[in-house]
Length: 88
Image 1 (cartoon, rainbow, N blue to C red):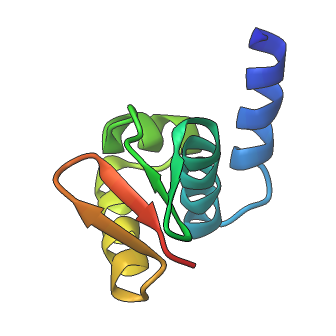
Image 2: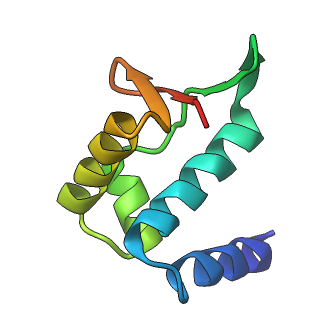
């Protein structure tokens, strides 16, 4: 299991740009722990922005900016500090 996690982390940090890295982590969390709510994927990821930053090789401020960008573009919805809805 640790080997699989290492391969996933390497793939995420690999050739992807920062936005793609964060999007990949969000989708992994949503698919692993999310639930369908009338056609949208809702997740309460247990990862903080600091966790996402560490996992993607980015800093926490960059992750925060990307989350706001995704929300502004209508890709995700957020309510509270942890609830996330994948819209598109």
